Length: 442
Image 1 (cartoon, helix red, strand yellow):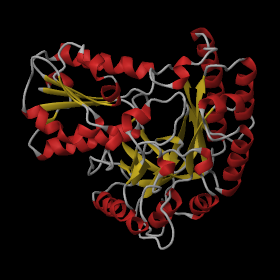
Image 2 (tube, rainbow, N blue to C red):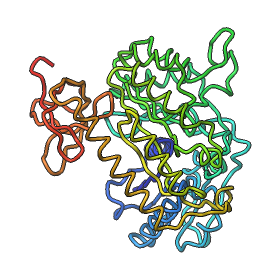
Image 3 (spheres, helix red, strand yellow):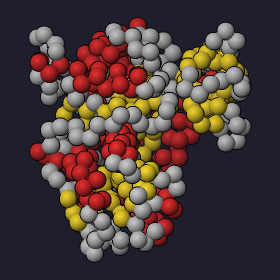
Image 4 (cartoon, rainbow, N blue to C red):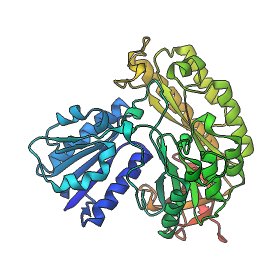
């Protein structure tokens, strides 16, 4: 049978899809390159925003339209929190929650159904990371999920209800999986989780092999760094207060840990942050960013921002804009506030009108373009180590790649080889990418 797997959302969800793909391949299923020829459709959904819900529904309906006789399996976070809503979509055979993803093969083998079978599981009792993938995200880089779930209670976020409590993979198991990925030829491993900064807080001393200390993300990164693997490692996302001085020092001195940090700030106004139930304030965030930029050479710092959170007036938005504009930030990911049923923020007073949210997003995106260009410009004429990807740019035909500090490159030389790290000199900025040429001695 031919299976099509479509994934929405975060890196952890993409990792889960890779693990599902591994299971299916091991059981003689063929992964379809084109969904039109699939006998089974698996839609791994996201529910972080209303737009993600809409996209999930679209993909489910498209699967039904492409092959009415196909088995349709819906899994992921949207399925987890709104199973009954998914069940109303025509053609769905199985609705599988996150704790049940490992049983997808069993359900597929049962065939089509007259009415949806709902198997959600119980995220509150989940204590393992569940699915494990051999590799993901293509030949060049692979995600490695080392943590899942979240114990925080951000007022806008539904994900703890979809993913459960924070839980971590012990360090020895992580190192074993890294060895396997390195043996398979991956040149970049992206450490990911739902709340990566909470890594290890649930582990025992025995579980992480540290004498007298509980595990944490810095301990994990140090354990990885000291082994000098023949690949590089990228940290996916950490809350600002979770980037310790120890971690900064490790990254600054490391040959293999990428000089790139992504910090989900969400707002630069202290009153809005308090309503969000975030654990950071603007002044401390600014101090943290300045420290990171000073201590880690050529570091790239990315930020998540929510525009239009309830109670955010022009004053609060200006506080956010001005804070970001005056810091050495390399890029932003901007999200319009989205009401999520079951969250506190959905019922907050002073909801911002859609028009106002859109306008603020546009202003932040304009600032983001300035930030990206400003950061890239610093490296024109300089040499950076770039990992060449398998895919080529559609417009130019040049190889694409990324530097350790997350700058997207177009490599114009035919000498570039996919899945290899090469030294590239930036020539010019083209469409938010740096056009570069290989150094002859790289």
